[in-house]
Image 1 (cartoon, rainbow, N blue to C red):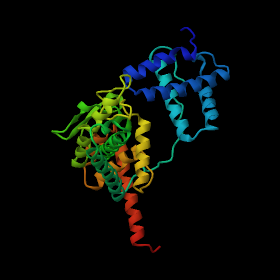
Image 2 (image 1 turned 90 degrees about the vertical axis):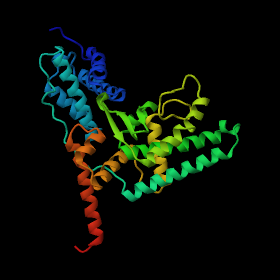
Image 3 (image 1 turned 180 degrees about the vertical axis):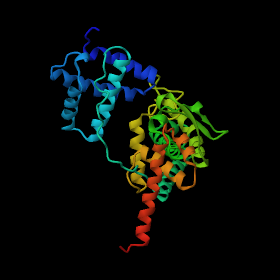
Image 4 (image 1 turned 45 degrees about the horizontal axis):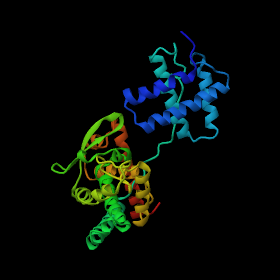
Length: 326
């Protein structure tokens, strides 16, 4: 077997992850970055070909990155490197997989951060009030002013309400929301088709509040933003748009969630915390765990079971307040 420099297979691995495994572009980019970092360190240790890499080399690499990275980062990098070497073995690039016995650092079990049901209601009430004010503002100005900055801000307030209501109603991931198209929404059935990890699709229902917020966004404000969009940024399919008419990005969604959480005076949260909150509140309300698993797109039931522990911890906290004696 001919010796091969470590970098020679990385581009092919990236293509494999994207085209065959179905990993998202951000995931592929993160894996590639972690693997390149590993290969650079291996080269600095004198390792020139993939065939030369040993488990001792990889453990030395782990020790090196552990000096200035959190355990969670080391665990992510290790997963990427193990995936790369498994790919190389499967494609006859190497005869033995040196990463097969490379251990991933054990991470402490941290319960997901969630809002209480009262906090979630406060957040949704706040964004809905903003959206109502925005609708009134748009109705109050004449057609010429609809093209102005004030109207754009009002349109985005209505969009924000639709985003937050849908995130909480469906428990979808932020990447799934930004990838949504208008045709994925079925108002007659009140469902949305979600494309998740590995391009796996699932259909998830949503309730009246999300339906009203979505209709308010799609029936006018979205069109107003598209009218102003330049051809370079125009995205006619995207369900949610940025101010310039292009598909909204994940960073924008995270920023608007943080901003509205602050305005509602609830704990600062991420879009993923809304996903956690949706799952916890569904289980608290008596939903079947298998149904919640399917709704969230979890491949393993054990992932969904984490939310039962959240409910138990919340119950313990309430019990301690009700019965404070030690």
